[in-house]
Structure formats: structure tokens, C-alpha cells
Image (tube, rainbow, N blue to C red):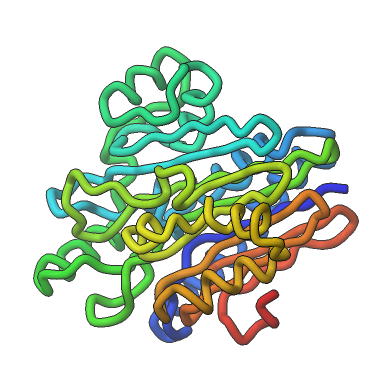
Length: 312
């Protein structure tokens, strides 16, 4: 038995706001992400490696707010955060404020395995990446005209903004993530983001923080969140979901739904989660969330809008 679920960010309002062509490209990238994870899992690979493979595809796509598609901070620099956690040993690695790492999720894994720390920031994270042979690129490699125009609009409107929306709509919720169960019965979670359009240069969101945007524990679940990062940090969303299962006797779906629909404000975001039985839940309270899942023996399933399926 193996399974994987992914998200490419929540907060979409309408198909018109996203655009037909961008939606088509996003769906194709989500499909590719699931296949990349499956290639790891069907060959006996770990949940961690499957999460990394899935997230790397989305980091390399200009469609999502992570890696190549990262948004600009207020000073015109793209700074990225990422984290990863493995459920069998409850180890974690995270980074924030990097601007030259092609795939931040690979560096998060290196921090977990190669250092005694959980999180590194900025230039020291770059130093470790060079020591570990992780791909480093010029900051200009991340630049896209689409993201630059977003920054200009956000500055003009004096707003921080959601990576998929116009300046006059929505709240900031963009990120990418994956959760996976491998054939050994272990689970893992990974999250990566470029943060908020027009954010302060020193801002760090939930995607870098274990227990807020990412969490994994074999006895409960693996979680990757996407939403208004400040609110997810305050609510300790990912870790508390696990606690609700462990100490509150909730099922995976009950715990996730309680947080997303019962506690968080409307139009805040969502999450994906998996447990060791292969149960998957992907609740969100926005207009849409790029998401998909794949279970051993089944074809990849990809959705964008909230009315495409029953959220379970």
C-alpha cells in the first residue's frame, strides 16, 4: 500500500480570475507531480523521497508560488521558505529566506539529515546547499514577468496579496506541499513557498515552521497546510491536527474538518493530510485549491475548484 496527496495553493476565487490557460498548465503540473511521487513509491522508495519528488515538480513550475514561481517581496527579491518532516522518527528540516536555491525542499531535507538543527536562515542555508551539492542558481532564474507585474500592482495598491489573485481580491494563501505513505507504512510531509506578494523582506510564514504548516507523526498523520500563514502559525494548525487525533480521538477527516471549517475564518486556506491507513483528506474553505491524490493501483486524480468533488 502506498499513497500520496499534493496541493499547489489555495485561495482561488473563480475560473475567470485564474484564466483558462493557467488552469490548464496547473492541472498538467499537478498530474506530473503525482506521477513523480508514484515513481518513487512503486519502487519501494520512502515517503520522504516521494514528497520531495512531488514538490520539486511544483517548485520547477512557474505556475505555483514556490521555487521558479515564487512571488516577489516588497524589495524586489524572491525569498523562499520550506520544511519537511518524517513520521517514523519525527525528525524535521526547514529553511527560510533563501533566494538562490532552485529546489528549497531538497535543502530542507539536507538540513534534517546533515545538521543537528531544524531550521537555517538565509546565507548560511546557501552555504550548506553549496557544501551538499544542491543546485544553486542566480536570483534572476526565478524572475517571471507574471510575478513582476503582480508586485507592481501590489505596490501600487499598497497591499500584500495572494499569488493567484488580483490585488482587490482574496487573502494571501499560496504555497505547495505533499504528504505521502510508503510501502513500509511510514508517512512524511513537505511544504514549500515563496510567501506573499509584496511581503516585508524579513517575513517568515507557516511553511517554514514545523507544527504550523508541516507536521508528520506515524501514530497520527502527515499534514501540509496552505493558507494565510500568520493565522496558521497562531493556530498551530498542522501539529494541532495531529494532537486532535492522538489525544482527542478524532478521525483524520474529523480533525481536519474541525480546524478548516469549524475554527478558521472563511476564505483562509486549507490543508492536505494522510494517515498510515492511506486515508486522505483535503479540506479548504476558499474558492479553490490546486490539489490531487494517487493511491496504489489507481490513476492520478487532480482538482482545482471546490465543486469538483465532495471534500472529504
